[in-house]
Length: 409
Image (cartoon, rainbow, N blue to C red; front, side, top):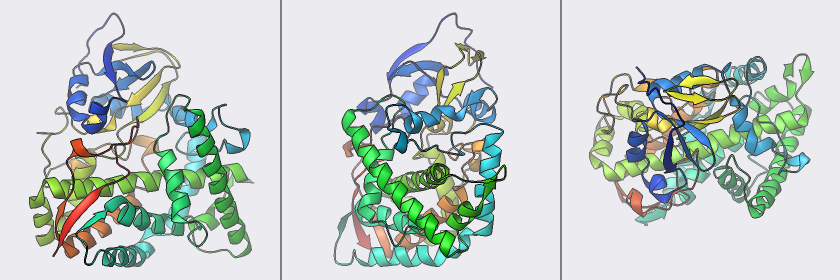
């Protein structure tokens, strides 16, 4: 149950979500915020919702809280017209959301993800074979990016066209998106990579028109919404959403998994003995230290929430990572419990109509990668959280580089 503070004025927490202390370890700050569950934070004049019940309510009610907030970085007037690709599904409200999500759902049903398992295993094994004779690597550069990159580019039909360097540049910029206008240098780089990315997508779409395949791109090319095929902008927006959502977050969840193995070697030992527990490890990892720490909404009307008065058009951050540590929902939430009951009730893949369509794919990618890593290596050692260079983002908790030293199993 959410506690109402019955406030007469706005709650300004004084918390800056771009502060380095927050990036290194947001969880003590989340705990403070849950005592004033709906409060104002910096940068800007943004509401933040921190308790599980309130976050779930926010995500479950698109008639009150619009996902159009997430369109701001992609469709704002600080971008040139040719670079404003609508992020369909993720930024839409009903009824349009259902019409476009149905297109993707049908594509996933027709292109079952299980066919990717051999590719996942062979890619992971090949990448790890390069580590022979070395006890230290940059895990992000040498495993996470090429592993997820191979899978995602295969799904969206650009695997034989796009270089990993191009993809990494684009994804790195995506991970630093903000709701406020970025620097001119950032805009220039973002537009350059967006145009290059759109070229890859449109070439893949044309290839599928000429030679159809049983894959996601072919289904999107042939899909119809209200009797009309997707425009080039819609097609590019949908594919770029899939790549960014499925790429950045899964890479960072791989990183967080390695960090947990380093901090808790007993977990890695238990998973080696009982690999059937790896799916449970993934769910608890998603609750305990998710890569996606927040999402955004815009209030469509005035509403009281958590004792605060939110006005129409106010911007609101739903703190998914804080919800996962709410003691009103999860017992002993600051302890990583491999055998936790009800762990799948975490909100790290969202909730309601915007629950992540790619969640089954992400779970499978993580499961295969952790199986191969744990089988090959007996120990993992990486720097403590305080010694890592965390990405400065409102939405993502992750790193661009992760030095890892390991021992062979």
